[in-house]
Length: 317
Image (cartoon, rainbow, N blue to C red; front, side, top):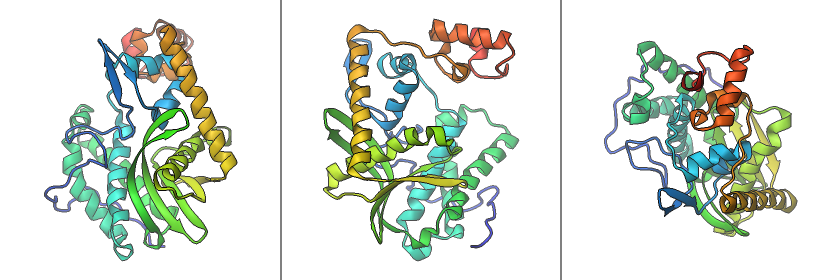
């Protein structure tokens, strides 16, 4: 495998007509949340009519945060890590859409060059207020994630069936919505793959993360009628974790989705969403709207357990 170099500055020419929109994504000019649940207006509030992997995970982490995001519809601007992931996904979508012989490091570099001006112009990226050094670090993060694909596989050897598949299906009683990064054909069957630009989870939390791709496998089967063999998460530049998509594994993930959907609707019926406090309250965009979260952050600040530059500290201390 060849050594990977960083195209610092992304000096390639910008293509015309290129957008950052995956299938079903938000309009150009915003950073798309590809599996954002749609909502039905209910006065000033909104009642979600789909559940996605990301919204389901948020509800499990903290029902109060889910309420403020998806019912009260308070703004939740994406942070730098999420925006980096948006650009990484776009570059890899285009790369894996090329013929196999064209999926080279040089091609990835050119695609990053083409996409950068459009991405940099997004309002959410501009809102980060990056100076020259910040832009340089941001580009490094993008390129390290893109180049990290070669540490996991040879893209030229992948038999791609589809990329950026919008899956809007009924999984049992749950209306499910998500965008699957990639579907591959392999010697032993179909494999669904989702990219991650963050750090891989510890063994303790790997099962929770794999539920996401198991749900994608279930949705792919429901949509295409085609079963899958494996589901995997590519933590770019680090490692992959995967699971065989047996009926038992898929039924377990779908069953947990059903339980979460039922719990979510009980919360909606009673208008009661518990706050689950902890270290992440200091990074939650809604801490100022949550008395329990605000108290948790103040307690941790007084105990010296949270950095003073954590985003929520400024709003509650």
